[in-house]
Amino acid sequence: MELESTVHTEINKLNIPNSKILIMPYSEVYPRSERFFDSYFIQISVGSKSSEIVHDVSCSYLDFWYDVENKMISNVNMSLKKNIKGRGFGRGLVEAMESIGKIMDCSSSRIIINTNESFWTYMGYEKKQDYWEKML
Image (cartoon, rainbow, N blue to C red; front, side, top):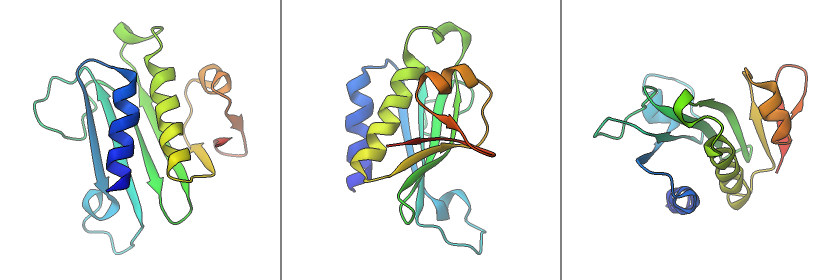
């Protein structure tokens, strides 16, 4: 799968110790949904203590949806533990996500919930009505 190799290539460039990658189609994340979306949930976790690849929110992570039909990155969610903040991990993860989006021919990246306006502004995102967006 082109998406999987692209994600692994971009994340490996970051050289982040103890990182894991999870890629799941919409139908696996929401198996009981009657709606079908041609999209993929992608999570990059850092410092996970889990030996399995799971949707791991016990560590630092960045997750997002790659919407194939609309060619965009959406629902970006990031949480960094205090021990890795300020060391460039967040910036690196966001830049890798944006690079994945560009390679997959996405036109934009959207953040719905934003708790760190200064970070996302620094990363080039602009506030719209109820989301933040950056053209890729």
